[in-house]
Image (cartoon, rainbow over all chains, first blue to last red; front, side, top):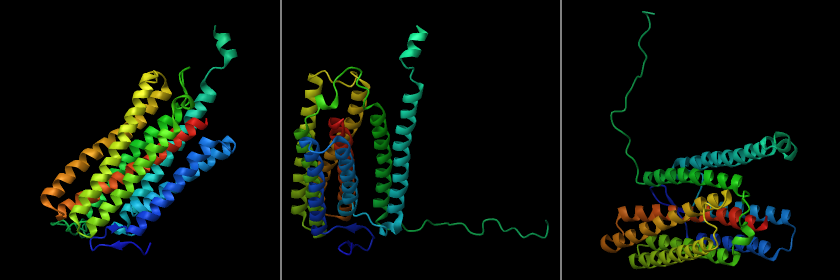
Length: 118
Length: 204
């Protein structure tokens, strides 16, 4: 990350090299998941894991090379805000899916109960 | 009790600290993080409702992956061209900034054009938001992202006029910097959209 030149005001700007590295990595991390799904060579579960993994890595790549995220800019406050947001996002996503999955699995009447009600 | 000296607040700030120029970037980042939460909720909604087809069309029947790949490349290209605009701004080359911003705008418009084509196709197939819970959450999530890109484009055009008329003054540099964060942020959200909505949807 020494390639980042930081202005007096503390905002980091990327260099041309940063943007090109980020772009190259993003192209690979986009093309591979699309190819995996469109060609369908692997089984579904492995493909899904690869696709989600590539997305996570690409999000980090964008954060570092395009948004110039680091732990120092603005006295570390941008990074703190990002970590806090990431925690909320994980709670929102995981919590919603978890609770709603169990509601769906446990609360929906099955066929015998529906027949008993009728 | 009476022996106690009042220790209450010992000082008050009568003047705010001077905010360095960079604080706008921090404030704008806070806005982006709150926007991120909006998208998190929409993703969670899609995650819960995404398989409720109500006997209607499924993602595999609806989505055209080559078109989505083209769309994704448009947005990614617009990200790198915006990066070049930022570099040109750092070098103080106003015409280059305007040129790269213009190219970014064209890629952004191409993205929106392809998305509108896809939406028109979906409506034509009867895959409207009221068809199923899956489609309601799909339209809300992807539509919200599309609206963000649209307003980003409006902002981009306004900013190009400002840069053309006033040059790369400090205020304009700050604005270009903020739009840069907004634009790259939209690309980050799109990673989530093409992964969880399109790729994993077709895979299901």
